[in-house]
Amino acid sequence: MTKRVVITGIGVVSPIGIGAKSFWDHLIDGKIGIARIAHFDPGGFPCQIGGAAPAFKIGDFVPKSYRKATKVMARDIELAVIAADDAFKDAGIQSKAYTENPSIDGKRFGCNIGAGLISAELNELTAAMTTSRSDENPNKLDLLKWGRDGMGQLTPLWLLKYLPNMLACHVTIIHGLMGPSNTITCSDASSHLAIGEAFRTVQRGKAELAICGGAESKLNPMGLMRQTLLKRLTETMNDSPAEAVRPFDADASGSVVGEGGGLLILEEFEHAKKRGAKIDAELIGFAATQDTYTVTQPEPSGHSYAKAIENALKDAKIGGNEVDLLVPHGLGIVAHDRAELKGLKQSLGNELNRIAMGPIKAQISNLAAGCGADAAAAVLALHHGIVPPAVNTKKIIDDATLNVDTHARNQKINVAVTSVYSLGGQNAALVLRKV
Image (cartoon, rainbow, N blue to C red; front, side, top):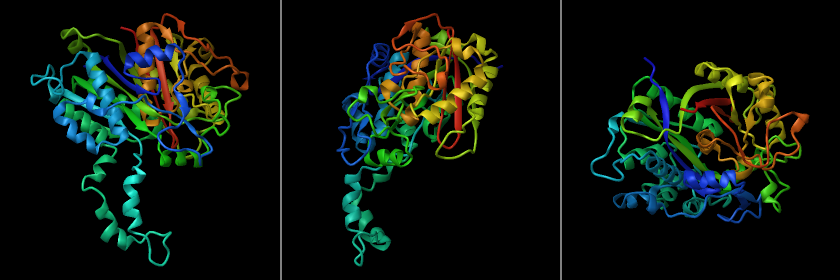
């Protein structure tokens, strides 16, 4: 028999706050976490703004016995570890990180975390690259010298900082999780796909709990350069960062990169009831689709994106008329938003005009593989009965009708949908219900 799956823990790291409570409070207050990039000098880039997480010390979020391991944590890994700590504490679960006598069976606790392309820190590579320059042309890399001299400049554990699966590795080691584990690297769709896979694992009874979602930081020169070359970023809003990202708005000029992530703890319903857990929502539907249109633009008709939502609703055994809230992808890139709107209209029909929409990237920027923050926002909105604001969505593209407001709204919410897409054609949708 298929198991019911509920959400009992939420962990978030975002540009508007560390911790699910701080994230939610600032989200509904309309706080915007986009500002001039301070991690490095962005002066040579056309887009010089981004969404940075508040300052933190990673040692505050791991057991004392594990602090030595933080030396091999890239920024992306740190974000996942912090979100996991927040989720476990929110769920009231005593894992190996907090006690010698955990309250859960680690062999029945899975972990699925989405990750991005972790960029190496340039200062670590500088010495190695300098010693590997060609004698004939100092602007070229000599691979023989790289193998003989350059690699020796790197710490022996250097690679362990930059493998995408290290997010899940550190989380599972810290908390003593030995259930089904996986890493998904599908750009912006990574978190929702990871949540969907964990959902199926618990549904099938292969685990009683799973921590899932994703985290990523693109606030580094390489991450910013890639998005610049893909022409996804706004280049006209450096002096107006609070107004930079405008989801589904006719005046939108592009997206903004950021850092953060969201992790959810999924739990089998009866297991959650037995331990008296706080239940935030029930996950009742998931679907994913793929198209092969292009690696730089979404499929213009939105057909594949629509199918993900349609199939997720079928999986949940409900219709669009039962959906009360939608947390869309909403990047603030007009061509992308137009394709997404077409997909939403195909999947939800005229119900789209009625369904309250909360596009949140105007406040937190695009967290890429960290779009688990979108899923967290949907769960929190459902739990609290509040629709997040659409702070910069004022003139809807193509004169479309959307149920948005620049301020948060109290509303009875029984069913919420959160959907994402990524460059490369991955699409995913989750359906949540109030318990």
